[in-house]
Image (cartoon, rainbow, N blue to C red; front, side, top):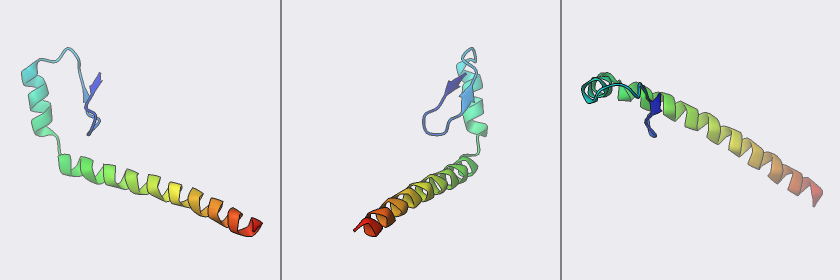
Length: 62
């Protein structure tokens, strides 16, 4: 399976150009974008929590 970098679409490597084109035409990019935005939000929250914990530890140590 090959994957598109941005949308992570799985495509059969043996598929012909026409079949791949039909898969791309039938793909709901709005739904994919919503899912990706939710994933990014979750990831950002985790990072900010880690940063906040580190900042609290630095402030408590002073």
